[in-house]
Length: 468
Image (tube, rainbow, N blue to C red):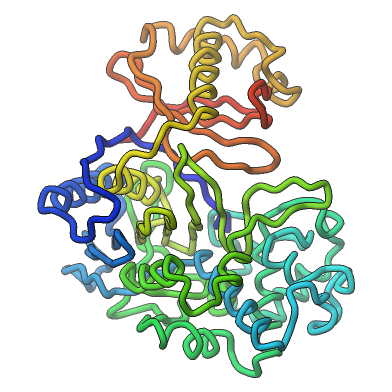
């Protein structure tokens, strides 16, 4: 379950000149959002989407589109979609609330609460929540594996995955781990004396007027159905995982509107103390002082001068994206009921461009764009300067692959347009930037990873046809 996903980019959408403080959407903006969603659903085959928009610190738009299930022909904007790993920020918030209550500390070791975790006497709760504990992830796949057809308990997940040798010494590396959040959820339950969902309902959901469900129970009549497709095959309903597999790693279902209420609380600094919000949004540093921008259940960063707090989610048959822009008091929520295709991220990016003013250009992104365009120019002509590539990238671009790049792009001529799409992110020690390229009448996506710095070498520079 690769719940920390990076959506493939779509073409840039022209921004409307709406000030950030404006609250209600104009009729023209509503029409633009409708077109964005319906066109991308149609292009991707994703059956439905639920969208919410916050602007000026208020929820100004909430609407559902398409077919939510075989028995729900009319979409409802209150229908609860499975938000999967977006749930992690709520589990982290529960820990922060308990710390404020004086019942635990982020730097307590796991062994204080849960026995028999590998090296539990050296792993801290903070490391569980920041994916720096070294516990092996139990669901890295983007499909439902065999064991998921059988119900499981949180302890069952711990017994199978959290008692293995650690993947690395705690605090020395970052690696997404759903297992760590299962352990954290059990700590919340042990300390609070109640089920995690009950604690969240009492301390967060009821005060904010949020209706949230255990996703294992959000199945059947009245709930959106998850869908998927194999390659370019037909879109089919998928079988949910057996009960227990998400727990605190991603157990929640709610509507886009209800998730937006939480985003407003983040903007307003309500429910949690201002200090706890800051702690959640502060990137955790590794032993060597580096960080990839991940805090406690959220990813943070700056894209083209605009600060964001973000997390995505993937459950069986569902993808979700939630992005908050605190400085603009804005947020965009997109929930979809298919885990195939890239409609979720494409919708979020296009809506953000349509309803928020364009951010100031970022000097680093501008310089990186020029470097990426030059690198593509080399690849399309087969004249690769290998000093600009890492050892792994040079290994990937063997003579056969380099020849394929040169031969396949020859008929298209020079680039017509070359633009960055999406947010600049850190992952695995590299800077990730994605681009949209047009050659003639054909669009392509370029996914790059480079070493940090103005002259960082490329670890990856992959080009593929765009789906639009």
